[in-house]
Image (cartoon, helix red, strand yellow):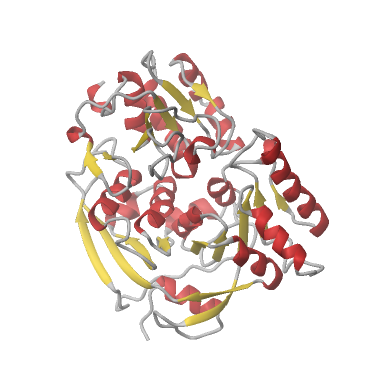
Length: 419
């Protein structure tokens, strides 16, 4: 029976030869993760079960990354709960401060999530790991508690939508623009409970960083997961990092999809998603004059070294507009070090930007860059809902790092081509 990559991974983890969309399965989990917002809830439920051990202390990651360094007493208490639980149950992968990074950048970097895995996390952007060829999806804290006990979870097998990209990308166009363009086309509910499978010559030419950006934002189209089949780019990334064996899966040529779409992206411009939904996309040339007060370059979507380099390319020798606050957030300590070694941090500081330690902070309106009433920000983050980055009357515009950097310089949403 022909199978998609998603169906093959789920079938293998359910001990089956094949599965069909709509089936309910109990599947083995390879990795579980939670953060400082979601882990304490799961931990409380776990403790109430009176179970004495977790299913595997090396297959769980606890990453405090949303409100760290702790911004207040409550956030400190949240991390205390995680720290004590990790110590009590021997959780190997508890990452704090000097080791802590934004979870969806940190875990692939550490070789903890791998091709062929089933990964669940109490965070909606867990779908990021699909860029490695894993089935990865966000779940609730209750599911994480159960998974930490049993090492299993049940899923309804999703249908798959095949998204093919052809052509050659123009300068300054990235994976962020591909996924924003796609969400603009199909809408924020266009892939509800389906696996978005990204294929085509354009995907094959993308670096791993851009692939992760695309998989990361599959949830913004309502998808259960996003996935890209492993190739040599994947293996080059994984083989120097993998902490355990892995298996690569690929869709059969005659696999059945619920829907197939193709995009010729040769003429695609950098995209900007207007408030208050990621589907409200426009080419940067059609944005008009929109002044901003803040630019944020970072997050689990665009906080990798490639994103820092792109921003530095635009910012070098220039100064941020006096009316704009530029916040740079390297997503992990190793990215921070690499940016420092390459001289990128000096470029950011010389441009009058501020450099934050790794944190999700401003993305969810929690820390390190909250917007006041009526303020506008351009951000490389993944959501622009009402009040997402601060006050309910503030506005967030989503864009790639080059657009965000150019906008910081010009004081309005702008293309790097204008500089």
